[in-house]
Length: 188
Image (tube, rainbow, N blue to C red; front, side):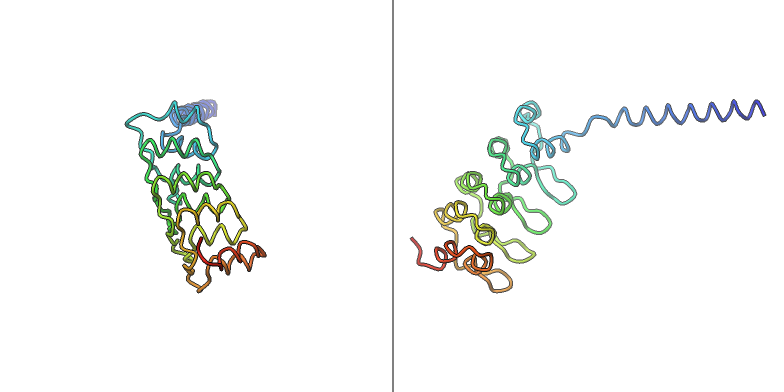
């Protein structure tokens, strides 16, 4: 019985050591995972420390989101600028066809929308699930400044989603009459 207890104790120690070694080597996330986290949380100093000429800035998470998409979603304009300067694909799409532009527009980050448009992003891209554009997103949510930014950059106010509804329709359905009237009116 004494020998059996010693063997069990040795096995338990071996398991604990193996567990500790395994988790110790796994404690530092890969640079790609770090970059996604940094972009989401807006940690500019961590981004500057991580970015090197060899850094792959278009890593993707399980939903195919890139660091640029996460930074645009959360309104981290300095991170967006740094990632673009480092070569991030401005029109990268996730599994549903969403881009950084759409994520910024749907969350009323007009400054990021303006930056992306100035740098050449697609203004009228339609995502693949409902056919929404950045303008439809912004109008439906009542984001007047973002709508104005998109229109200033030539967004097509006549595009319709897969259900046949325009940005003006979405604005009206969302109770945003001033935006709906602006979109239904003639171009300026």
